[in-house]
Image (cartoon, rainbow over all chains, first blue to last red; front, top):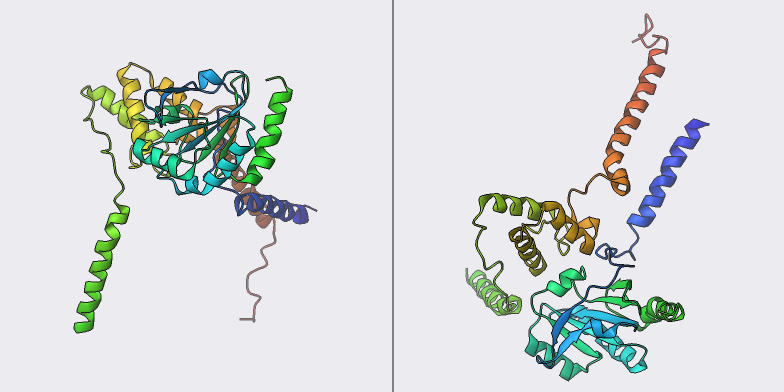
Length: 179
Length: 150
């Protein structure tokens, strides 16, 4: 009995391990965020378009919003830009941008030429806001509920499908729960 | 000789042409010197050597050249100068980047598996060897060549 069960058990264990470890759809660089369920870090930054204006998520208390981390150096951000514009047109919620490791003039040019999906874009000069949010690349997209808690983080370019499947249901649930 | 020289010229031209494409507007990394207090500098080196750079993942932030690592080194430096403990700095990092940021995660309930697995494997191996040895020692000593055969 053992002669059969032991190798069989070992085989099943290996098969499960490989199914997980060798899954081509798994993004090995996408790490779970410890921020999920916690209060979103506050930030006060200058607006990319108008340095005299302040962008802060304190003003968004009571609203479900999205924080999208991007930069003009980031090819995948260019790739997701159409999707963000499309989402902005649906007018579901405020999309706040966080311009990360960037130059202001380049960012302004990007938004003027490609269109601006953001309600406001904070300019993270020294990467401190990014550190607070546990950002380690771009694009990264956070979803924050009305009580100011981070409820979801998506690492990869945004697509209409991802928005449909991963974001909209969570937004609706967050709004239903009164948050 | 001639084709070789031509090939070299083409290669050099290509190399020259491709260089500007990599020349990103780089910001000087870590534009400050060592910490003046040697004890603090030693702690700085220890902590940054224990924190994973999440962009390159197998390099510590002490070794990595990417900007995130530079930003995190600055963060560690500032926290040290502000008199924060090593634990406070590690907690700051794990609160934001998760346990994965530490190369040497502390032994606690949720990390028990990664710390315990090698010992569990060792015990399993010892058990298997023990069983095989005991089984074999019970076999009759009949593997001596029978007289007359070769």
